[in-house]
Length: 378
Image (cartoon, rainbow, N blue to C red; front, side):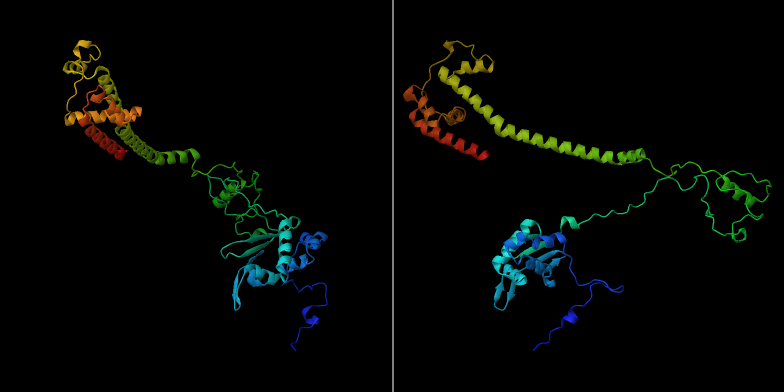
């Protein structure tokens, strides 16, 4: 049989510590926590509530992540991998349902904090403190400097101390005057009835009898305005250079963007509108002769009489005319949504126009090619 430690060796029959003894190997538990886990409400959830909390507080050292925080992870044993929840139930010594009810109730009351992470993070339990058990300390304030000068700025610091030692004798004072005790009091102007000719004694007496001047700033102190001026002189050129460079870059980007918009959007649209207006004039007048084109060049569009126009004549189109007709069809498609086939049917010679049937497929092919090229540029 294994020997067990007797109660007399585990527990001392004493209730108070001696003067040379101190506490060790113990846990602190708040009174509010003890009252909560042993309350009738806790017993209604599970009678093992207080036991569960005590076993959390007294968990083995391997489960403490830091002070007040317990961490339970999955363990690999001979029988296989054991989940973190099973390890926690083993430490608590209760069934899974009892541990679940106890931890859920304590977590709701704020006695403990509970977090179960995924991907092998494990379970963390935080042992919270009762609000009534936390007091605030008044921390000592560090002495702040007054900023005043410790001595007059026109004379060196005192070498002697003004402290008067009890029972001091003038013979023991190494800085006492050679003619005996000084007749002046520190901080007051008292005339010596027997002035001496000794230079050292006279200088010492004058320094002790001088009144303390009001505190003044050090001569080497730099004012705020001077600091601001120095910073301005050093930072202003850098800031101005950076601002100029940024403005130039912004202007260059805006110019490039405007040029790209003009080349890809504004100019093609203007060309399409011009083609549309030209087609409307051609359709209205049935084509223009050389005199009409000359009048347009002289800014006299619309002033020519009806006698200067000739009716349209259907003829075989040249490659240049095929391209112009195709551009007109594309312009009508983009501005009015009129399809190429509708435009070709309107200007066909069969319907009273000037386009021969054998030229219609050529115009359609060129118009479709123009549409594809414009779509690729966009």
